[in-house]
Image (tube, rainbow, N blue to C red; front, side):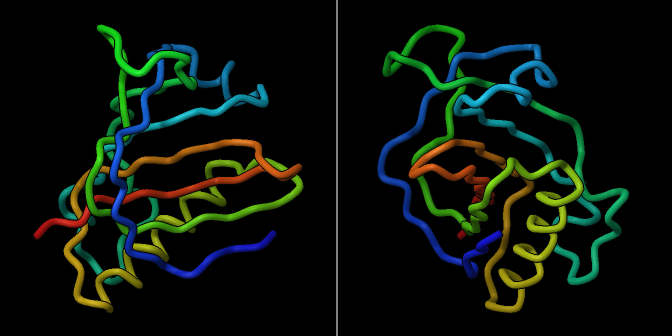
Length: 140
């Protein structure tokens, strides 16, 4: 697995997805997926967050949309993010991407960023590899 370092990303255009309630079903397929989670407020700015308490509730699950906008769509909004990705021969499971998200928070705090309390996890397949991307909004 090839991991990237922590990056600051300025996402200029939102990415749209069609909402689905079938998280486990879509994770078994090779399509682009977006998961949106709340981050536990007590853990969201902690240098040593408790792994078991890090994620809050799953806010939404979406699959890649063929249209730009539609009622009921969810999106990864345009904005400033802490960004990390991992590319490899398989899709990461929740334990693996959760570890990435926690490391991203630690690195972001070390660099004096203030991560927001939302976490976006994007899964896609490109250039013959599975890619897992972690987006965390940065508060100004």
